[in-house]
Length: 420
Image (cartoon, rainbow, N blue to C red; front, side, top):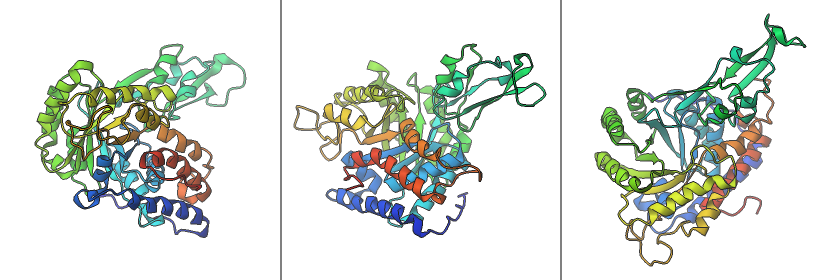
């Protein structure tokens, strides 16, 4: 059952700058329509064919509905083609609410596809949560886990054993708090920095029956299946469990790591399994260095290298190819240097035998940790004394967040800078 969105607040005059910027972005879109792509394909697929598809990854395990809602609002206004989120009804509802609020600002905004992410194997790093008992931690711990967490998912407070705030006696002190489960998305950075080795990782597999029900919703457009590439048995089991529900979506994506020489054989086997999904489109997500885009420039090299390896293989399976895992502000430049940005032929060749000259070798880029980081910096500036933050209630911050998001989306789409 579709969750009814919360009606947005009436737009005030103070939102004029936001509407102007978002309207300009929406106006750029028709300029990018090439040939008859917009007639024969949905706009999201036309973007994949051109090579300027952009996906926001909210996080397969990130379940903070308030943040997901705000991220979805901002990146919808910025012009993304798809928003990928946890396969959870409340999270899906938050995504669609954010999209609806964006449409209330600019009715002409393109509604992105909503994608839910699931896994076939508990060993997939995207489907785990950190866990520890703060009372087992020494009260004088420097709390490196709290400092390193990119999602602000760890909160520790030093208190006296009787519950009062500690003053000076460490014998009577303890730590309370711990992991905020809905915010933890499983990056694992806290595991290695704990000086007392008290943090554990809890892995899980999304329930196929719950996912199948989500795929029946009218506001879910796509599914992404994360696989470890260690065999097809678990993928096949999940696929069969989803049953006919996959026929309700427009696109089936498979996210996989670079397994070296065995990658193509694995992909061909997966493609054979998914051929029952004959009415939609297929997408391969090349997960170079998972959950690392916010670390720095070098994080994007692995996914670009993965793309170089696959596009050089003529018998790779059909479907669109999209980068993820380590993507950030430097990914477009790296793709350009590799000759793969919006390219329909391999460098040094004149034809594209693998996919056909009408489609880009790399369909687009998915941004996760880095996309959340740059908008999250703005969200953290908003006063929180009134509970959950609705970014549209603070138009000056919404405009700043939109400008940040556009620094990622604009270069992929080929849009001119907003200030121009």
